[in-house]
View 1: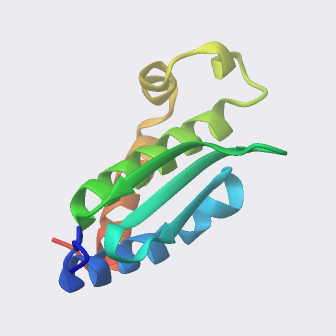
View 2 (view 1 turned 180 degrees about the vertical axis):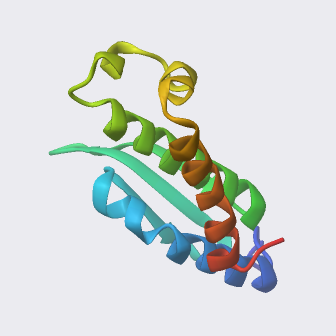
Amino acid sequence: MKEIYITDSEREKCRKVADAFAELYEVENILVVDAGRYGFVKLQYYRPPQGFEDAITFTDSWSMFENLWEEWFDTQLILLAKGTPMAGMGYSEIFECLPKEKQKELIDKKVEFVRGAGIE
């Protein structure tokens, strides 16, 4: 008998999380795939010809959500800093330099992702 590492319930939740972050895959070198009984795998940093440099396996939707949320958030900060004096700063420094309205907009986006992923 083959061992199962993810429940059917968590597989469905993870699928919704992966779908909720679809916009991230368009801007970043990231792909999230269903690995069947092993869970979901986030593949990152594709470098031809050897392939992806990083692979993280998830078997629960909340840890997958948090990981993808951090990826999305950090990507947004990098994009906002690009071509500005903030470009050499760390993530928290960039965030602190943003106007309060932009900070709120970024933080509020997490609620949208939670709703889109259908998790609590």
